[in-house]
Image (cartoon, rainbow, N blue to C red; front, side):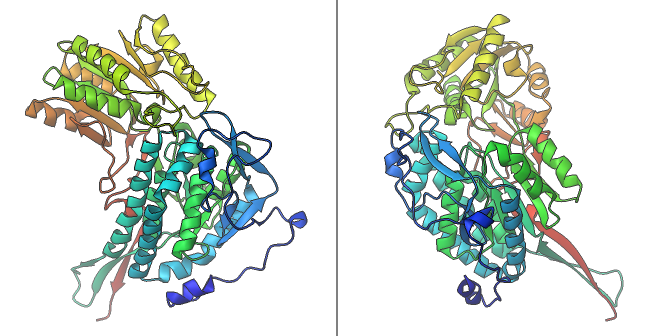
Length: 533
């Protein structure tokens, strides 16, 4: 590893002694090489699992440039079949502390590298992701369940953040400010905040990492990543490629853990005084807990939290285009995205036509199946708890008068599969219009006026994304400005793009990711007054 730092013209971080044998330590070095998922005699491989024999499949944590194992391991399961794919190191507080220390020790040398040098390494990491895009996509489908085509799209999206921030690394500009005093010169510098704790969700197990880590590394920060317990293999595959790309030891660390260890690991990452920054994507409830932890040491915080996206279709809309946008916005990843539509509001003049065409599109264009099967558009939900929440929302709505237009029950393919569902006669009293479902449920409400639609849309205490369809230019400006969300899709159901700022308002979070603004989340502004001239 020292040669990597030397190639940058920098001194390597302080060397740490080799770890003791397993019997005397909480963690130890993992065996090199890849692992064949589903190869354990105690587990059955799900469809496509055998295709994951790859050197990118790792089961240890990645700390200070080394693969480590913990005292215990936890299972990673295929949500389509329930089969055990692999067992991954169940890191705890000790491993998290070691990772934070490794990141801290690597920080001075990494921040001291030139922007051009950091950019070159990020670009190499991007190149390796593209070279290995098929293997990376199969890992996502195996542990997350999303259709392989969607997983392939995620890998390209994920890699694009490394490419983007490799370019942005060289555009961290300061300022020269005209001084009111003749004998002074005033300048502003931008400097990395330090160690960043990165906590990511399972629904986009690759892209949610690179969107944060790309910005952090470009800014000169080092990172410790805690991936979701359902999908750690993608984070570890990224670590393998970062290592191959020459990212120096300690700059990118991964601490996988089970749900049982998540509290202890999260607390270390949010309270350790060596951590300067926290970036989290997940539920609003968990975000509030992390904010309370971060307050003790006043850390910089970015939060991308829950959404409850409205999708408004006005009488002036092109109904066919609105249906196509609704299908994409609602059912991508089986409705398990933070920006997917959760509430459909359709004006009374076109309500019936929209519902009829939407139902027809759901039946003709969506196909449930294993993510590895060709033609699948709807994979499983991540676990049975997610299925139960969809069932709860449907039961509540129907008990209050809603009608099931299509779907409404589990699919025979397996316990985590649920039919794409469309409800009509929905009201604001129903749970599905009051909280995020995070599943393949589309509740449709009828409204009369623009003011009524905006009142319903803005009644939520969160505001991540919102969508509406209209062909009235004046209405488009009015509604776009009045929707209380961080991102608006006008006649468009998909809004995410690497060059665009991603984030919300209200209780949907703090800060922005991606775009030219994303790197600012990892930079401090320093004012320098040069006097006596």
